[in-house]
Length: 437
Ligand code: PMP
Image 1 (spheres, rainbow, N blue to C red):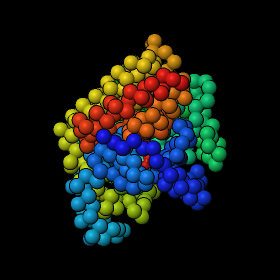
Image 2: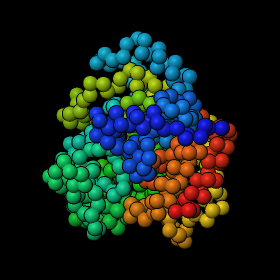
Image 3: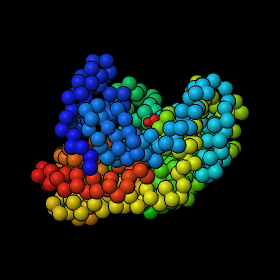
Image 4: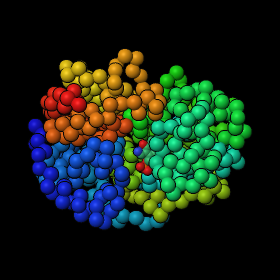
């Protein structure tokens, strides 16, 4: 059983020190527990399905570093490969063999013809947009409200009201000029896409979407939305960019592509392919990728791109991620979903669980009647205080969930029957806590 985390003094002390030197005390906002309150836990180690904080509390981990840790923490083979790579030197600024091997692995698993390695998902989507604009000679980009593609200026535009909302900066520091060419539409809304193309069709360079969105909670595409987007793009001379940073190499051997088989012009990857190190990629059609420097004139570069440690960790992770691993991830995710539903039903807490393969999230809705979350607007209509109470009770029970109601839960293949039992025993009081709100 996981220890009950009733001690947080060391995390609290570190958070104070962190807050003195770093805005909000964290290096990525959602880590700060702002949505749920309380002391963010500072982790010191991970082993398999668990992580341990500075106060010695051990948690069953359902965040998995927001996706990368598909095999769990400190997998012995990944650790050994990384240690051996580190001992040979950590970066040369020259081409290396692991980059080639990782590139070949990605090309073998996905529909991309060519791939370029970068260091974060943000870089991947930013570069894919530039390439799409360079290739088509067009300026406008369509994105969907509630989809997150990293903190690329042009993609931080939020949806306003109306069918077609020309991007309004959602973040101070992002200028109106930067988002003037971003069109934000409601997700899963084919009519909105058709209307946008009717008005701006010959100016649209690309449509970018999460392959199956997981950043407003899990909101899968409905009615062949991706196939519709791909066709609309093709018919109008635009590129279809599928962002598989979260889903890639997690949901199936390729990603969401392995579920719906819609072939994008460009794809972006990250998370799992770095095995816990900074590695990401974008890739796609050979004729489009040929426009990238040094082959073509669209510039893109990176000092640490294809870093030998990151590529070694990613390659080792992908090689270990066999069909059996994906089958286990699917089983584990289904079991957890059913445990959550059983516990919440027992306490009469209305909820909807939506899944995209082994990615899933729980929405605390007002009522289960006709409750389907199709877009960002639906996702926003949750009873958020219920999630906060549930989250903290799970944390007290030794289960680490994403500290936000708008995030997917991530499983690792290291979760075994004991881990599932830990989740089950944490769920009963957590469901009661949610019911009490
Ligand atoms: N795209 C998607 C779909 C993501 O989920 C994320 C990160 N959560 C990103 C892009 C950005 O990746 P990174 O945080 O590595 O910049």
